[in-house]
Image 1 (cartoon, each protein chain N blue to C red):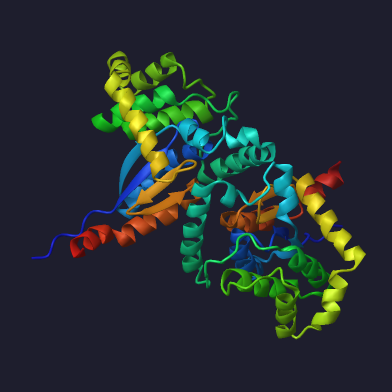
Image 2 (cartoon, each protein chain N blue to C red):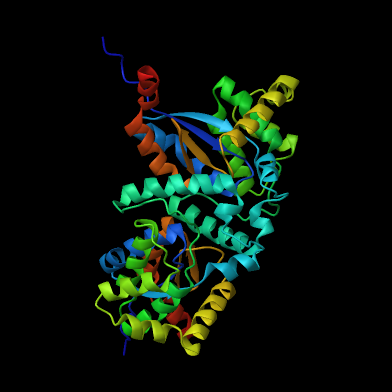
Length: 214
Length: 214
């Protein structure tokens, strides 16, 4: 008896404060559907990851030439992908609450549209995504019960879940965002999304076969 | 009277010790020809650029997760582009002599094949490109008078020319390699080569027009 080939899967690790994560959050769902790849959304926090590397701020702020380049690059890429973009008046914004809410969205099935709404608010509408009022409005606009969701997001269990996810990110060798992971392969950066999807589609089931052979 | 449209041009800033520069050095000539873009080869040294950012080594060595990722990414990309790759036993290698020789090659018209030979030696053959004997062999294999070229590379004028080129790199906001520059637009990273060529081809003559209108 031959087992059916497992469905190609891609883990998508992103942070709401991250500029290049914005591009991938907006692009990934349509592209993954076209490639026949299932996406696991993995919101996490870059702050602890950067601290582990010795940075107490975004490297785009610590290294001004990198930052100047990034903003121009981002504007060009938003143009190329036909995405709205407005230079945020604050960078990086605090993505903690949005990430906690996104974890609730993973459990309840609305993480993708919620993540796009948060990213649009941060990078196209210059709104403060660290503010619970803003997040509440975004939830309500999606037809979700904002108060109840915000309460679920702030339970000790959910706070611990985000902390565990971020610790897993460090363990898996992540050092920025966005990232795409399939099998044991890590792809870093919005510009690797196409390669990551192609890899997932081509190599689906390899690690399973390896396990079976061991 | 209408002036003829100027030929699209792209400055290519690269460093012989840089892993992602390897990929671009091998790819750029064919791709630029296909896009109708003329390439100005700009070898420079990353060491002084990194020092200006506070790094006394490659960031791939300073930040181990970044380094581990880069080597795997490089192997995957070499595979994708059908380029040979062997993990070098030393990284980064000293690209000073190769860069000085490359400047002579810019003046004499053989910079492209020489640069490819150096990159192959470093990243596919694990040879020490900091060694004058190795560089001499690469020059001879290209049918060039190795001793005479090495002598020209080490004149005070040529040493100063490389220093000036590296200072210009810092002034222009470069913080890594490879880079592609057209008009006032900077593109950083091998993964931006396609975008940079498209930009050069589409926007050729814009800065000239701007100057004319001023």
